[in-house]
Length: 308
Image 1 (cartoon, rainbow, N blue to C red):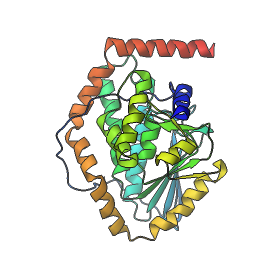
Image 2: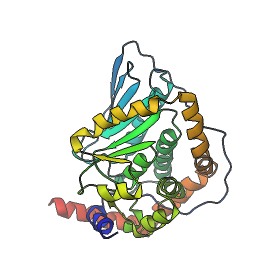
Image 3: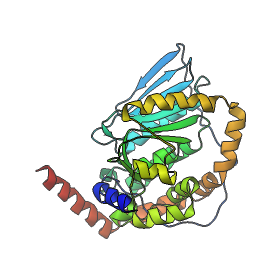
Image 4: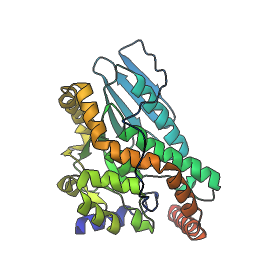
């Protein structure tokens, strides 16, 4: 616990925000959905590179590697999230792709979470569009029919932690300086209900309750201890280990694994989908408050002073 609190203090301002309360109704769509977008390929190896994300698919192995490459810290901006969603749709529709490894192309950071610039001084309409894109990232990843493995090769606070949690399996660099967790309360805000549910489904209710109330960031060893990540390996072996781990998942017939995944995750997905508009409206109402915007302004000024 003490180590996690120290990690939170160290990385507290990296996790870039994600508020709110928990709706209670639970109704929604049936099963895991797949979004249709054509993705026609002729060669065994294919590469797709946008400005913020690079995807390499080896059709002979069925494994795609998605590298996050949005300096300086892979913040989840609207452009980043849009690019992420498009790439997920393409991979989901490619029959040759059975598994996805997500990692960072930047040193020491997996993703620092939501981009504060998408929420500071923006119109309610923009904030709503941004939050819908955050929801879409989670939905596409959490409901994916692919095997998804997060190769966490750096710190991953807040929204970065959510991205890793939405995967089926998490491999993290064995570096005690790297932190991972949903640390929103350190910034005076509240993780939304679907952040909370995703973490509780992974590490259990009590551990989640302590983590969210105290805004904890866990070191890599502590993250393994509580089950937030599944495996620690040397930093230069994170991606290669993820590729090797795919073999264990690929040994299971796809239809059986996919149906089981849907059965386990459907209640959480349905709860989010049925409350999606509520969640967006709640986010916009919260993030546009004068007190929150004032905090953002103070935070931005502190960053400018630090750079100076």
